[in-house]
Length: 492
Ligand SMILES: [Fe+2]
Image (tube, rainbow, N blue to C red; front, side, top):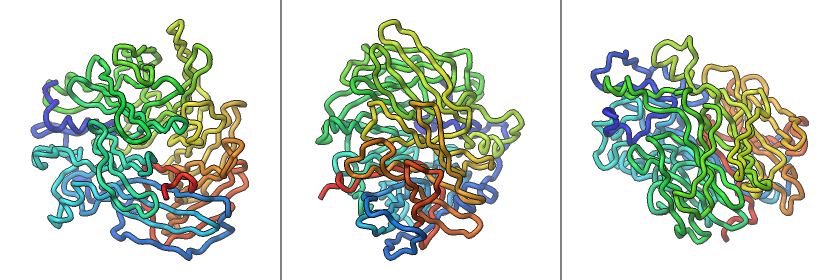
């Protein structure tokens, strides 16, 4: 790959597939002024606050006990060059619920890059849509830690989709405790098996081994690693686990060889290649992985997986055609088109005995950012909570869909006009008896009133609307992934 130079440590993403390198003929559009991902619901904020005694409409249930946390990009300084939504410095917003009270906090993740820019008083990195040659040599791609949050071993780990350091945060104060080493960098979407306390993770890169997989014990020490043989570099975004196996992805979104010859980075969806899912025993060596082929697609997020006899069942949100719309002309239109997800709830069955793959749609609506009861990760779940993707030009969530994957039915809640939800994790009651015995929580931004709130829904009846709304003293920009930490799991 001629173009796999410094920039490719950045793994040009789905959304940066139109990125050009110096000398390329594709027009460079100055996106800063018109970039919708720096304006309106996405505009960064610059204050870090803690607020209690908040206005509540309805009530905060006394059995809602824990912390709702959500990560997202929030650039500390005005970006230089073209800005991609995925570039911004990670900022975590949280709402701590206890005994009928709620406290809101927000803090940037104190990454090394954040601290260096803060000390410098200005930007030191350009983002993934720009040539990265001017970036600091020791960190060609800014490690922004803005993507995902995983609660593990008493820390909330902030993770980065392009593989970065795992930054540990205090789950209540959001103070950055420092980096946690797992024998290398981690991708976003590491998984915790609450039954064993283990962390399952992966990372990927432009040079062999293109994919690595690992396990850390409940004390944080790495107990197992495996190098996974792939035919070339790939862009996996998520993985899945079962009780005894992990599932890794090799999907047909690859570097365009023609563009690479011309010195350009461009991704292409090669639908002549299958999607491949690799099932590896949890502590298995790399050569024990068993690959299952399926119809070509791309996957951002798995929902869950579990074992049924000889079969692995895996539910996920599947993108049938990971390409910009045909009428998207020019870099900005393509960027916007890429960032609008078009995904459907989907089920695979991989037969470990016969090697057969079975696949089917579970829904034909456009939903993503799935949440389940995290205590069921790797075991069968009944309910899945996705956000519904709106028809807007930018990625906005206009409601929540609760799927019952046992009966094949769903129920829905709409945020209302001009109101946009966040990933909405399930917050179980203590000693919950079902995976909808609890609440859903979501930051909702009201674009008409320009303010944010946290909405609390009864997970057993989301159609009834919020049981409580907690109004916030500042706007929460639209962001990425969220999690819920039950109060009884918080380290004391
Ligand atoms: Fe993600």
